[in-house]
Image (cartoon, rainbow, N blue to C red):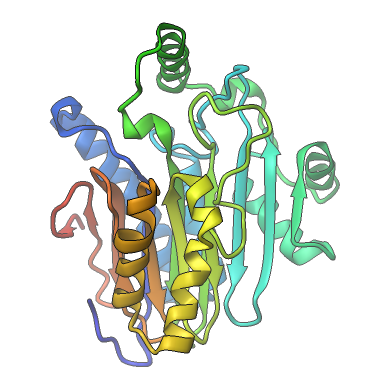
Length: 320
């Protein structure tokens, strides 16, 4: 937990909860995850260190994570049971609660830019499917073809999951059940923002939408309380309005960010099957990164410029 001055900034990122089991992780792969988180942190840090807006910082950070095939968003998104990729994203500006979200799309290189276009260039908050795709084309969002988004890792994970379903075996691999990327920030002017992007769950039903693009469930930002980006079992996070519940506990019960975030993740979500975690930053720049599963790819940078990341239940470490 940090206690910054009013001139400080804070940025936190995540690359999804439900990490690869330690027994399956090797040093090279672990280093690659830390490097991906570091690139995202640095992309957002540059914006904030230059006095930029929180909403621009979280956009830059999430774009970096979407471009990294190791994470389940943008390039490297998982596949539905029908062998298609359907991506969701949301962004929220805490200064005025402006928000934009998209769901069920594949084509825009960076889904977070599609969500931001909805926020800034439409009268709506949430667009889905073909209508969202048409909107992205009309607004000039950069597109890529299917080969750009394909990775052997995600395709093989789909085949393994489908084979387990046919055999009746239980899938205990959390990394296949949920994966998301996100960023939250507090800029030097005290404004907050959150952004979240995901490919969803491996072998999900076509048309399924999780919590990531749902404002108040997987994404939330309000200058008066906090900014949150969640990752986990989306259906549970939606049913319990996870992100908004944290903000409400701060606003109405006077709880600290750490107290509210940890209570929701550990005491509310975990007992009902809500495996996952979240990253959060409050109006003072303090941050909280709770999770209730095997791990969460996560990182933080503040005005000292030191990039700190972690994967499992371990302290953040300096990777700069």
